[in-house]
Image (cartoon, rainbow, N blue to C red):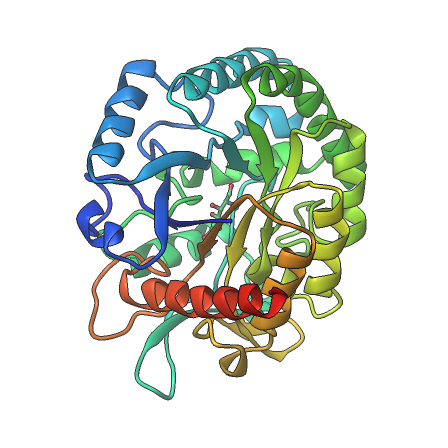
Amino acid sequence: MKMTFRWYGSSMDPIPLKYIRQIPGITGVVTSLMDLPAGEVWPLERLKKLKQEVNKAGLELEVIESVNVHEDIKLGLASREQYIENYKETIRNLKEIGVKVICYNFMPVFDWTRTSLDRVLSDGSNTMSYDQDIINKITDPQKFADEIQNQTGEFEMAGWEPERMAELKRLFQAYETVSHEQLKENLKYFLEAILPVCEECDIKMAMHPDDPPWDIFGLPRIANSLESFEEIISMADSPYNCITLCTGSLGSNPDNHLPEIIRHFGRKKRIAFVHARNLKIEKPGKFYESSHLSRDGSFDMYEIMKALNETGFDGYIRPDHGRMIWDEHGRAGYGLFDRALGIAYLNGIQESIEKQKK
Ligand code: DNO
């Protein structure tokens, strides 16, 4: 498997590529053109420059996270046709620079959601946390979105792009008539349209799970369990219709047995990308993001890595949300230090698993 690191681009990420290159075992970065609104074609010239920059630092660029799906596609509006054409064009351009996997999600309006971006843990570090009780009391999602934006400091949060947040009211209204079944239909329509292009370009679509893995604010969510992903990979049956196995997203629902889910989709060769992280579930619907270490959180990271190995996983993996430690100032969840520690830990588990195989 190839160890990677999410990087937001030199103008938007305070972490220089040269630091990332020094993390043991790293092969490449996972990135995107953060400034482009969902639905636009990613220009080839910009992609070539990005690739050059990354390669020059001694790193590969084979995974994009994310090419965001325009809301009109999720809503199934007639205007989706143009956005789907643009998506195909972007896939073709990404092929030109050697991309192998596109991570995306199909969550209406909000991408990943937290109720705090800087909860202080007993060791003095900061981390992100979620509490369903807080969400349940929110009557105005716009106010909530503004409050989260205020906690991000100067860093824009991926998935919470300003153009999307500016439209919350209109989007909530538009989703009033979209049921879970309708959302699935709209996903099927999208996948059926783009997968032939993925096959031609040898690029896997890796769908990220809903985070948290249940409906929030009354919006439908459809990618949050073994059964729902089984439905998703079968609705458009192509080896390029894959999953981003995000342990933190799926695992915040304790009914999701992570090693079992990994074995299930790993055997079918439908896991293209892994987000490996740990979190501590405090009670149902309430959790905080711990260090990657198994004993700090609720997941057995050794079992997770073992399941990946057992199914011969040879895709891309990255550590996920880290805490903010050692006074690092950066993008919530995406600092250098704790994610680098996460990689060192995952490398250690991997080495021990490989040696036991011999
Ligand atoms: C959060 C991320 C998500 C992810 C998207 C993929 O930290 O894992 O924002 O990038 O859901 O489309």
